[in-house]
Length: 195
Ligand code: FNR
Image (cartoon, rainbow, N blue to C red; front, side):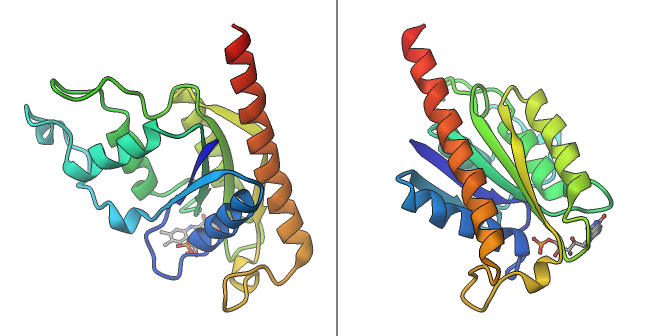
């Protein structure tokens, strides 16, 4: 099973990157074929229809769309900006939702992908409001968002210098989320085979 891990932040010391990294380590241990992407490696302009021309999507949008298309499941850790998820993440999701162009394979970045959401915030609510907004967004994109999620409050104190959880209970909570994502993806794949 192929699972993509990413954060909605390109910041070097991003707490959400740490959370997504920790999740990817747990998924690898559980046997998933893991890809971690850093949005800092895929800079894209703010979406503007004028930028879509005959040559297709911007190079980084197309590259990332191809990576998404190959996945069975996605794990997204999002910051909360003013009660929602950041423009960086929205912009990326918007670019990847654009349809194929002549000469490109027909592919959907999202349809039927199983998604788990998490958030990390230095605040006391752990980015809970951004999770609600992102859940609606991902459902709209025709993904299957599992009901389990993780809101990591006081995230500035959650990780040690190696990026590991200081608190075993938090690690166990993330492990349960990752395992539920994988179990749901596996169950749906078996369903597909029967259909
Ligand atoms: C924030 N932050 C924030 N935190 C929160 O819990 N609720 C919020 O509504 C906001 N709003 C907000 C707006 C803007 C413009 C910024 C820059 C920040 C704080 C935010 O959670 C914090 O900066 C995180 O560390 C950002 O995530 P990364 O980059 O560490 O992953």
